[in-house]
Image (cartoon, rainbow over all chains, first blue to last red; front, top):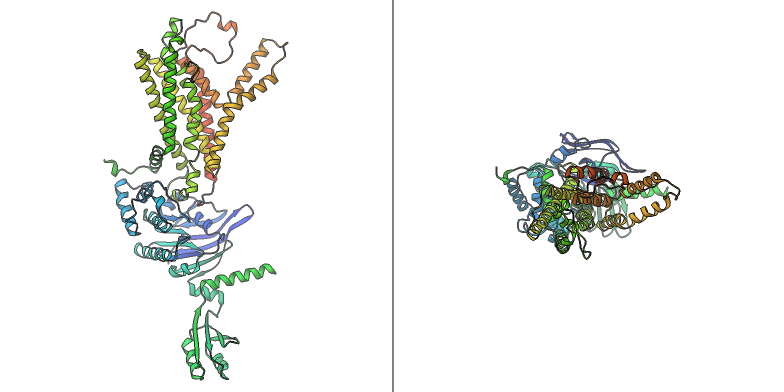
Length: 317
Length: 321
C-alpha cells in the first residue's frame, strides 16, 4: 500500500517542552486513520505541521508526496482541514460561508454555487443553506465544516476532534457521513479524537498517541494484541457452584492462559483464542448451572487505561 | 466573459469579502455619519466666516476656495482640523479587530487552511479598509467642494483643485498609518477590546501628551540668555524635529502647507530671509517640495507598522480558538 502521509522523526518543541517527540507514522491512501490520545498529547500540533501551519523543530512531513514545511500552499490544495471548534462568519449564511471558501480555492462564482449546493445537500444542510451560520447548532456547524472541507475535492481530509461537543446521535450521524464520504470519494481520512469508542467504530487503523509519542499503531484487534500480548480475550462466567475438577478441566482447554476465581461464583478467564463455546459446553456438562457468560475483547478503553496505569506506576517509582 | 465565470485571484476574493463586510457593518455607518456631520459642520462654519477671511491682498484672493477647508469662526473647527482629529479614530475603527476577531470566531485557522499565503490575509484586510476609506474621503471631499462651489459661486482654479486632491491623498496616508497601527495591535493582542484600547492610548498620547512632553524638553534645554542667535535658532529647530516624531504633527504641517499656499516655510525665518520677499503664494510644486519629507515620513511610519504586523503574524502559531 502506498503511503499518502509520511511523518519521519517529526519533532516539535516549544521552549523546553516537547510537544511531538520523534514521531514516525505512515497513513495509507484510502484508509481512515484515527489519531488517538488524551488532551495535550500533541495531536493538534502534529496536524498543524502536516498542513504547514506550524514549523517542525526537526524531521520531515510529506503529504501527497509534497513537503508540507516547504510548500504548504501545494499541500493545502490537496488537503482539507477541519479544525476543532470550527467557526464561521456568523453574519453570513451557510451558503455564503462556503462560497467564500470555494472562491479562495479558485472556483469561479458559477462553479462555486453549484458545488456548494451539492455539498450542502450531501451533508444534509440543504434546508438550512440560507440560514445565518450564527443560528446553526453545534452539529450543523460541524456538518457545514465537513462540507467546507470537501469543496476543494481533497485527496486527504484531516479532522481535528470532529465529534467534540456533539450528542450521541449527532456523533453517530457524523461518523456515518465521514465513513460514507471517504468510501464514495476514495479519500484518505485522518481524524484525531480522545473518544475511544467513536474512533473504534469507523477507523481502519488507529495510532495511540501519548505525550508526543506514538505508543502503538494498527487496527483495534492487533493493538490489543500488541499491548496485552497473548491475553487479548477475556471471558467472564458466573455459575451456581464450582463442581470439583471444573477449574482444572477449564485450565486444560487449549487457548486458556489464566483463570481468576471470585467468591461470588464469578470466573474471569483470560484466553488467547475464541473458545467461548467450548467453555460454556464444559460448564453445562459439569452439572452446574450457567448464570451468565460474556466475552470481552479488550477495547481501546482498556488499552488506554492500561497505559495510564502504567504511567502512574512509573511516576510513583 | 461574464463575471460569474471569472476565477478571481484569492487575494482579491479576500479583499472583496472584507469590503463587503465593512459596508455591511454598523461601525462603518457610525464612522460615515461622523464624517458627514464633520463635513457639513465645517462647511457651515466656513460659510459663516469666509467673508471675513478673504484677504486684503489681491494676490491671495485666488486661493479663496481653499479656505473652505481651513477657516472657522471659532465655534466649530475647520475641516482640516476635524480630519486630523477624526482620522485616527477612523483608522482605528476600521482596523482594531482585523485579525483577532477572526481568531476569536475560529475562522482564522479555517481561512489559513485554504491554499493562500498567510500574508494575503493581512494584506487584503489593509487594502480593503484603505479602499473603503479612500472612497469615503474622496466622496466627502468632492461633496464639500461641490457644495462650496454652489454657495461661493467661485470655481476653484486647477491649482486649487490639485491642492485639494493632494490634501485628500495626505489624509488617506494619515489614516492608513493609524489603520496599520490598529492592525498591528490586532495581531498582537488576542482581545479586540485590548487592541482598541491600545490604539486609542497611542492616539491620545500623540494628540495630548506628546506636545506637553516636547514643551517640557524644550523648556529644559532652552539656551541661556547669553546664547547668540544661532544657538537659539538651532534650539528651535531641535524642538521642531522632536515635534515631528508625532504623525499628527506631520499631517497638520503638511495639510497646512497644502491648503494655505501663503505659508512659505515651516521653520523660523530670519529677517534677512524675509527681507525683500514678495508676499505671494507658493506655487504648487514648491509647496509639495516643502512637505515632501512629511509625506515620506508618514508613509515610512505606515510601512514600519505594516512590517511589524507582518513579522508578528508570520511567526504566530495559528491555533483554533
